[in-house]
Amino acid sequence: MENIKKIPVILDGDPGHDDAIAWVVAKASPLLDIRAVTTVCGNQTLEKTTYNARRICTLIGLEAPIAKGRPRPLFTDPMVAPNVHGQTGLDGPVLPEPKMEVQDISAVELMARTLQESDQKITLIPTGPLTTIASLLLTHPELKDKIAHIYMMGGGIAYGNWTPAAEFNILVDPEAADIVFNSGLPITMAGLDVTEKALVFPEDFARVKAVGNKVAEVVSEWLEFFYIFHKNKGYTGAPVHDAVAVAALIKPEIMQFRDLHVDIETHGEFCKGTTVGDVFGVTGKEPNARVILGIDREAFVELIIDSVKAYGEDA
Ligand code: BDR
Ligand code: CA
Image (cartoon, rainbow, N blue to C red):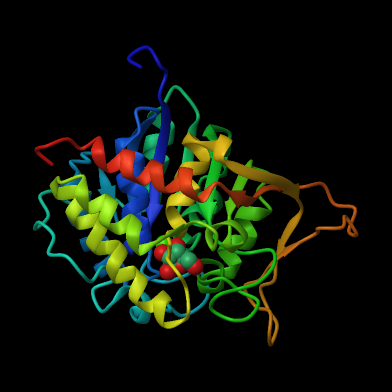
């Protein structure tokens, strides 16, 4: 393992229970080198998601620089999801008070600096609205060549979850998503088509907890909290959406992909925020995204359990 060349990544999210679990998996992976953590408003206000990011990084010992994104989407008003993630955006277990401070530069500037200083291309993993990534592309177009790939959670070719047509992350900032999907950068899309299959069942929560370290205890309680909203909607497990974006990078062999052209609906009475996938090739446009359509659920759960184990006895 020591000789493996790690993949440099930047985590950008709105934690959020599933963002938090995604970051637990990313930090545990020997394949990734996390160069920076940036926040965005989404599941909760920017202040809350940033505070949560600092608490998560403290819990898992993630020492990369953290910076705060924009307090609003590019053109629209913020939209939050307390019904899913609670008033704090990360309700449930008590977390350590943050040791990690926030940088005195913005998320975009931290991303730009990290890209500029890197001698390799960097992969971005956004698990919230795409506001920060779009802002980076608008303000630093010269840095596009330094981005290797975008592994993102958002959208859904078949359906939405916040409206019948739109998924939350894309609906919150459709213009940002439009900029990212039209950027020409390689995109792997972990949308609802796959993340609704990435279910962690209550019996799996117990297996996570049985790992027996502090991270295991917290992750099992995050899963339990995240499941409450979904159980009330008839789910049999918690769909850990955001961890699929990380898993797609480190364990692609457990997923099925399809290249598609995806457009973003930025207006519309019923379909604002929809990721319109050209499944039958009717537009003649070249694919701009590798869309994940399937996952080996059990292997995904094993990845989460193995990740939690990696924190060892002291965590
Ligand atoms: C997405 O919305 C948020 O609530 C989750 O963190 C995830 O990123 C799922 O639609
Ligand atoms: Ca998220």
